Amino acid sequence: MNSGRVGSWADALGRRIADFLLRRWDAARAPLPPKPSPLAQPPVPADLLDLLRWLGVALIGAGETTNRVQSMLDELARRYGAEGVHFFVLPTGVFVRIQDANGSAVDIMSASVDTLRLDQIAALYRLLDRVKRDLPPPTEVTRSLQQIFESTPRNPVLLTMLGQVVLTLGLGLMLNPSVHALVGYCVLGALVGVLVWLAHRIPLLSLALPVTAAALVSWVAFRFPAQLSGGHPSQLLIPAVATMLPGAMLTNGTIELATGSMVAGASRLIYGLNVLLLLSFGLLIGLEGLGRHPVPEAAGVDQLGWWAPFLGVLLIGIGHSWRASAPPKSLGWLLIVLYVTYAAQALGGHFSGQVLGAFLGGLIAVPAAYLVQRRKNAPPSQVAFLPAFWMLVPGGIGLTGVSDLIAQSNPNGLHVIVSALLTVLSIALGVLVGSGLVGDQRPRISTLLDTFLPADRRYPADRIEADRP
Image (cartoon, rainbow, N blue to C red; front, side, top):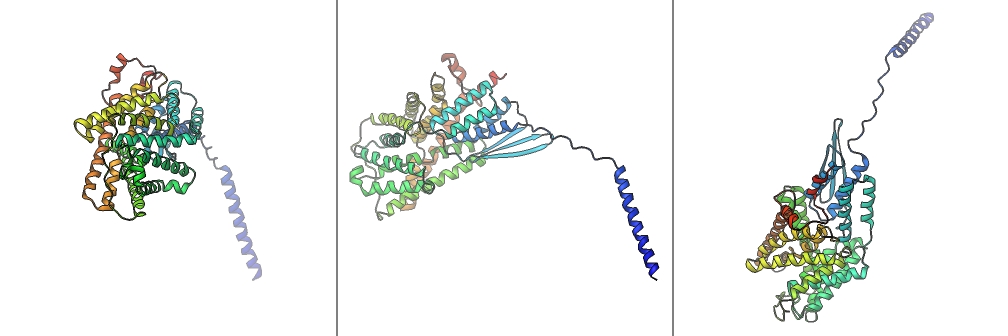
C-alpha cells in the first residue's frame, strides 16, 4: 500500500519535471521580441513650445484680444517652421495642441499675470519685432520674456501714486470740469492710489479692491460734500474709480463675440459685468455707512471754460505715463493719439450723441496709433492705443445706472445701463473697423499711407509674409 503511493508520487513529480523542461526548451527556441523602435521626435521642439506659451500669455497681458493672440502665435509658429500646431486662447490661459502621424498632445499655460505696464508692453512688441526679423533661438526669446515679466516699474512708487491723482483730475476735467470739484478729484485720486499700492502687497485687499475702493470713495465724498465738491458729491465718483471700470474688458469681450470667439467673449463680458456690480455694491456700502438719504444730482454751475477738457486730456496723458510707467520719450506720442481720439469723440457727440462719439473715438484711435508707431523713436501701436482706449471710459455711466437700480429702484437706471452697453458696443465696433483698416482682414489704408508717409519702422503682422525667407 505504501509502495503504491510512493510510486504515484514519483510519477507525478517526474511529469512535472518533464513539463518544466519542455517549457524551458520551447522558450529558448522562441524568437526574441523585436527591439522597441526609438521614440519619434516631437513635431515641435520643447524650447519652441515653451516660447509660444510664454508669448501667448504675454500678449494676453498686453490687452490683445484672444483671436488676435491666436493669429500672432500661428504666424510665429510658421516662421519657426513648426507644423501641426494649433492654439486655443482664452483670457485665462493658452492651449497648444500638437499633432503628427503618431498622434496628438495638448499642453496649457495659465495666463495668471496682471495687465502689463506700458513699458513692459513696449519691450514685448520690440522683442516680437526682433523675433520676426531675426528668428533668434527660442530659449533666448523665452528668457527675454521672463525678464520682461520680472522687470520692476521704471517710476518710483510716489510718482506712480501721483500719476493716479493727475489721471483722476484729468478725467474730472473731461467729464465735469467744476471749480468746486477740483479738490475732491485730487483727494479721492490719492485715496485710490494708496489703496492700489496696498492691494499689490495685501492679497486679501487685492481680491476686494473694487468694493473697498468704491465704498471709501463714496463715503468720503458724501461725508465731506461741501469741502470736496461744493455740495454735489455724486460728480466725484466716476473720475475717482474710473481706472477700475471694466471698460476694456467689456469692449474686448464684445469684439471677440463679434469675431466668433464666443467662449472668450462671453467670459470677458461676465467678468466685466461682475466688476461693475462689485463697484456698485461698494458704492452702496459707502452710502449705507452714512445712512439712507437722497443722492443729489451733479450741478452744472461754476464750470470751467471750453479749455478745461483739453487740459484734462493733457493730464490724462501725463497721469497714464506716470501711473503705468510709460517708456521714455513716449509722452508726446501718447498725447497725439489722445487728442485725436478726443477730437473724434467730441465731434461725433456734438453732431449725433454719445454713441456716435464713442464709435468715432474707437475708429480713429487705431489708425492714429498705427501712424504714430511708424515714426522714429515712437512706441509700438498698442502702447499708444491703450491710454486713448481707457480714456473713452465706456463703463462710467453703467456704474451710476446699476447703483440707481439697486439703491432707489429708479427705472431711469435701466435706460442708463442700456446706454452704457450701447456705448461699449460702439467703441468695440469702432476698434474693430479701425483694426480692419490697418490690418490684414479688410482693404486697408496702410497702402495709401505708405505712398505719402514713408515708414521708419514696421510692426503690423501683415508685413511678416513680405519678408519671409
